[in-house]
Image 1 (spheres, rainbow, N blue to C red):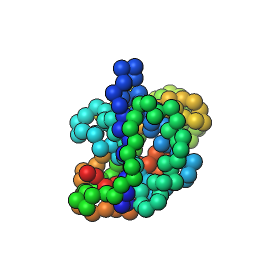
Image 2 (cartoon, helix red, strand yellow; image 1 turned 90 degrees about the vertical axis):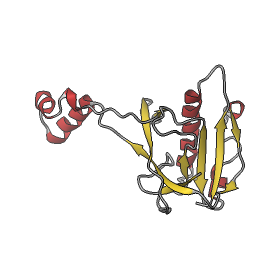
Image 3 (cartoon, rainbow, N blue to C red; image 1 turned 135 degrees about the horizontal axis):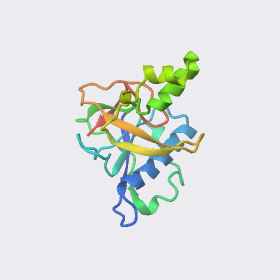
Length: 187
């Protein structure tokens, strides 16, 4: 990945940066999904370790002209008054590399029990004994709130930035621009 594109959210008295980042990320996700862009990664350069938010800047990473395919007129319609948009630029040579990935926790024992009941054809009581309420796991990672296009339900997408590493790792990115193994430049 040799190019990047920054989007910086502007302070707004009416909307928190978290709300604006959720909206921006939804638009980026839609653009990545529409273009089946498996070669575009994202990062949050203002993220701070042990922080509770992802910051006010989202960075897209790609090779050559890959970013130009995503950044089309109107792709973030409605956010022009709330953000500044950079230019596609070359990644600095001193950049490190980092995996930015989605983390999913089994935070809802009820949902896990329903799945288990369907999979194993067992009763609710048997499922409760296998998966007690105490099995719920909570994450302390920053997250985005997204709305599922298929169900209309809101959900949290937890984002983890793994430690810096010396070498880049090539790989595919999902429609969220995240990957469990591929790195993005970090600077």
